[in-house]
Image (cartoon, rainbow, N blue to C red):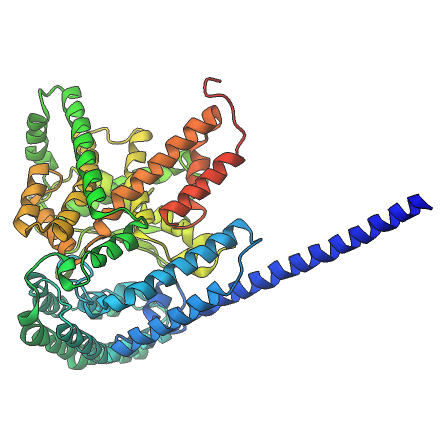
Length: 592
């Protein structure tokens, strides 16, 4: 009978184990379902609160709405963040698969950061977030280029948004007035750019651009009606709102702007800048540490430039630099020549992408000049829609073109186009099995770090054949190292604008128009400029780690796919992801 007892005991234990396993599985399943429901609920709320975001990701349900720019809207978003933070903290993530664990961590981090930063009230400075004093006046002017116009309904949605522009400006004026009261102000010379930019929008009138691209299927009656409505709305509502806004800035805002450059002068001690650095770099590095990394990288890259000069027969870097920077062949004659240069480099890289990646972008990319009313902006990328119907856009800085140079174009084209931002962002948008906030969100350290890393990939497959262009590649990297020095110099070490300009001139990293625009950019929007180099250094560190540990089994394309297939991750999360990937690979001896 004893064997039967053993059998019976084993059966009981097996049954108990099966019940426990089923309960645990059910628990994980239900908690995952709750998490996914929260992600979807929060994403839908964000689209509803930010109709322009919805348009950007190809969701056109709110295309007739411009959005709420009021203080009340900021408060409502904060309240939503507080509630969602409590909800995600209440979900136990133990037992979750890797990607769901990452999503849980990222969602909680993002919310916690926004909640922690809310009391700094930087939302009361909506004009200081981009170089040259960007803001609502510039963002609205881009609307005709970032909306769909392939149906009468889409044109009617656009007209509805035009009607809402006066209210949006009034809401922003109320926010700016609160900023004046709380002494949260941009630097005066940044604020002084706003009226001229607003008037530049009126002069350029981008709002009538949709009238030049009516679909052939539209009837003559619809074309006339839509043309009349758009023209009348722009003349009677949009332009007066722009003029009123410019006058408000001149009269009620500029006189109260601050004269000190550092963001820490706004109160809160060093916490304000440190919070900004953490947001953009996803690290806890201090300003002092970042400044030191910048100085070290400047020295290293300058050494590589010196080696390049000598390899090309020059006695030193100064003589090589003097030749390259003054050679007429690197000096554009027009804005069109600069745009054409970018198109050439992106076109030559496209067919070579399969040598570097298995994952490839499916959305097209276009290249266009930055319009005059946004002349202070740097060359940048704007994503297309996930369905590929609206292409990604590389917008190229072309102001004062004859004082610019071709030598950085190849590197920047790879950075902004392929294999840089366009490739990374379109792949991220197409990922499956991830919540929407991960497909359309991210952080600057990852995205800009990837863009800078991508510049070097052109060298690896044989581009940068022209010595001047290769010099430009190194100069582009040097520029990102210089940013670490000057951003922290401004906001942590009390540098003046003249000190920044002189340091950048002495570095020979960029041309004079770029020096002026970029200096204002760092003053207006601290921290973001530090993300490029720190992100690039992390990706290079991970690549070297993988090569050392995997030996001959290291596959560059597989490594790139692993970097890209998780979406834009904080640098520490990316580090952990690559470590797991390395451990999952078959390993051989390094000398094999």
